Image 1 (cartoon, rainbow, N blue to C red):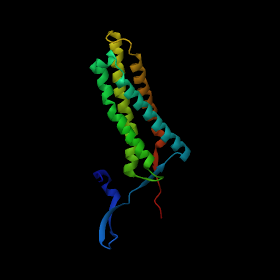
Image 2 (image 1 turned 60 degrees about the vertical axis):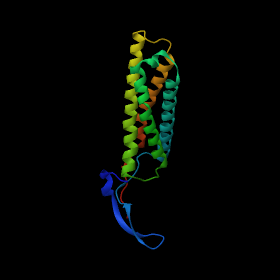
Image 3 (image 1 turned 30 degrees about the vertical axis):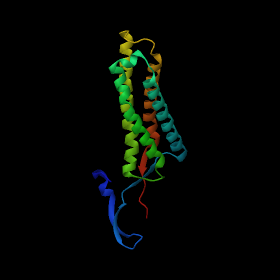
Length: 179
């Protein structure tokens, strides 16, 4: 299914199916895109995105598994629980990134670039909110001995920033039309 934004990129064409019946199918006729950087830079960027997303995922679930007083405070644990959504959507972005070919459609380009840009910022904001809550709890002496949770939260923040920076290597440009 195609969203309204990309409907103009498709044309309906009549083709013969295996039985010889005439069938109307949508065919992509919109602009095609390629990565701006060389293939080696793009490969390294893909690996970095996967590694940073994996590190953020491991840190997030390690943080949520640890039993500590700090995770009993709602303004600390709630942003961490909400981080599950951006992390899973970053994994979907990694999947899209790994399954595209040398040229991509406009919707794929937007999906890859917007997903890494947007959801890494959301992950950064949510984990920063949790870190602020953790610092507040430390200052109120509401939680002690929860340094691993804070370290894991900082790792999530660093990974989110690095994913946002890496998206620059994944920018695409429009290919000239063929023939």
